[in-house]
Length: 127
Image (cartoon, rainbow, N blue to C red; front, side):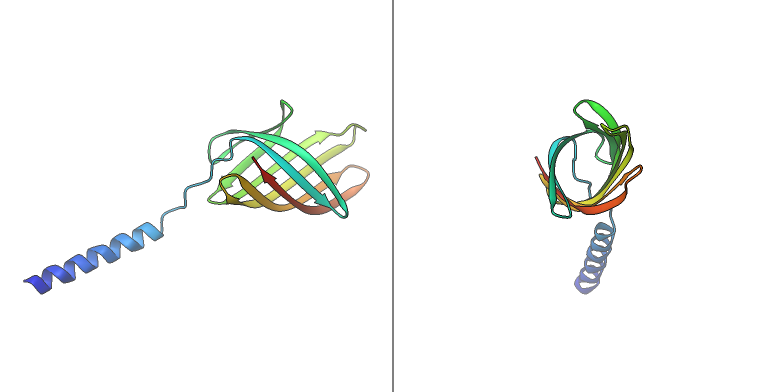
C-alpha cells in the first residue's frame, strides 16, 4: 500500500508541475513614468513617456498628451505613438522590446516621418 501511495503522490506532483509550467507568466507593471534613450544612427534622443492603464494594456502619454497605446505580455512590451511633429509632418513611432527587470526595458524602434521615410534604431528605458 505504501508503494501505491508513493506512486500516486509522484503522479500528482508531476501533474502539478506540468500545469504550473504551462501557466502564463505574469506581466510586468509598466505603469508610471519612464526615461528613454533612443539611438538612431549616431544620434541619441532622450525622451520621457508615462504609461497609464492595466498590466496588459493602456495609453502612452508624452507630457500629458496621449499619443498611443501599449501592450505587455509576460516580459514583452509593444507600443505605437502617432502625432504631427513640430514641422506638421505625420509621424509614427513603433517600439518593441522586453523588460530586463522591474525598472528597466530595452528593444528596437522604428520611426516613420511623412516626407522623410522610415528610420530604425534601438532604445533602453528606466524608471
